[in-house]
Length: 315
Image 1 (tube, rainbow, N blue to C red):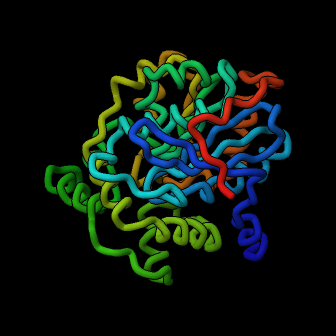
Image 2: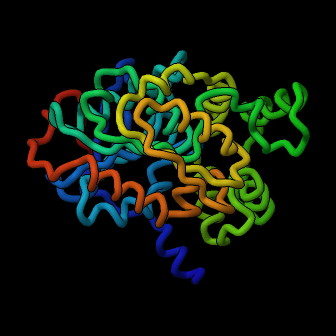
């Protein structure tokens, strides 16, 4: 079983990849998988992760879907932003740029976001690009505000003191160091369910530790003050929500509030015993929900691809 999990955690090889220019000139790394004219799915990863976080979903869906995965700024192969480049507006700008570069005008896709990726989708709810291209949305293990106040990473009762400590954790500048048994125990406690398989803990640890410290700190500080609660009510497409019951970073209270506020909500799925890393911890459940959404809301597309302006193919 351990060897199987290690094999399944290996990142798939994209059919092609490219860099897209965002509104401020930042270069956003994008990977494309699967048949070009198949139903499309876009995957936006969370804080300290990268496209490899979606390996299980990409491997399954790419057989009969066009899968678009991109590295958030400062993560994976996307360079760290310059001064002023850390903001929720920048995340929304990047999403719009990726959608415009990879989908023909009017072509619809299911958009999925985990953690900060879900916050990206919520932040872009009013954007023309999202409204043009989103057929449906999946929000995994995410929140729209009050993250330090609601997080359970610091094992204390709710208080102003716990909120301050959690804010400090989100913006901590100390390096994570190498992946080792101690660091994996810490990561598992903070982000995964108690029953998570060791190979999946190892996969998440290697992804998180690969995130540059500056990006981890910069985005952690943004998340500490994030509030996109008003935007949830503007997400006017069918939207499903998934959460782990044992999520300490974005506990289910966030998912329940989001699900209750959505204009076109498709319900909340709570995964028993799962933590924050649901696409890795419960890949079958997340992939099944994506397939359900594409089957219901995205027809087979024969649209031509978007024009190549504003993007640069990677050699």
